[in-house]
Image (cartoon, rainbow, N blue to C red; front, top):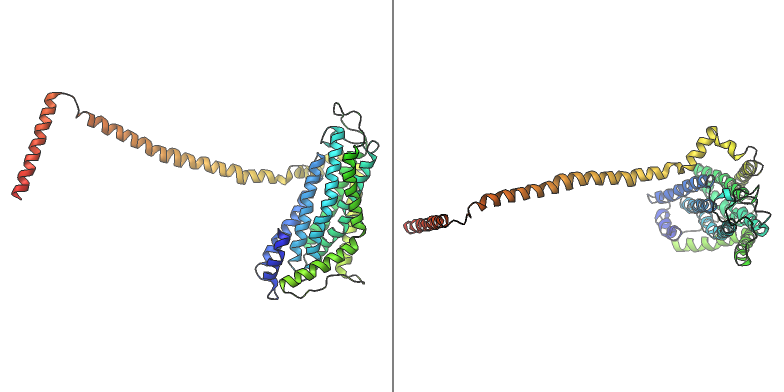
Length: 392
């Protein structure tokens, strides 16, 4: 939706030659994307379920897409960011679908979605392990895999837009992505088998009906990465010319012909550096276990892990602000308006009506003498009224 709306809002923002108030829309998109990518990546680092790691990873990668499109709207050179967001949608669809299907095959084999029931599956599910590696390399942004090209374009867009904080969040998230990806591979396929679920003592490779689909997507992810350089440039020309013509703007070339521009070099160096750092940290902790993951559950690191495991207390804050507080306000409103307002009025009305009917009932005794006196009094009143009218 944001990508489809981009030409309309971008043209309204930059048609005068300088940005107007609508540029805040792109600021919001970019910052929401960057923060979403970062926070979700931290959730992937501590999740104990296979598919939950991938779910948080998906949210993180969608954050990257929004970051690219948002950064594109902050500069007149919009092509790199826009194409990066759309290209990442395409590449992510392939490798993340493969990863989810791999997770399904593993869960089917071990009978559990938790990492504590996995481990040591590499020897029993070699083909699935290879597919996992291919798709994971794309997720991590390893060179010549599909995720490498699209993710670097997103980060490059923040450099072109001149937003160092957005750039910093983007490259730090690259390292976090590598950590949780290596952790996911290690906990599922490497090391020793964890707790065994009853009835799933003997693990075997996934059947062909399960294996072939994610093998195809993993290979396509690799193939997309091998032609990524040419695909990236083709998409830049295609989208750039189309969007520029549709918005009535003059296209500024964003295709980096040799020698490479400074922002391309800065993006490449930063991305590869974070790739190496994140992969090494994940490898040392979850593969070599030096230090072991258990050792990280003590001290300051444990506090950070607990903070992330509690989802940054976002859920707790959400429920406090949007569930408990409105509920308490509703209960208070109910007590004051319903109980002390409407109910009190109903009780007063009922008591008043009861008192009036009790007093008026005394005029209806059923005795003949009282009825005759009442009739005479009424007749006398009518007579006096007629005399007064005649005299007037």
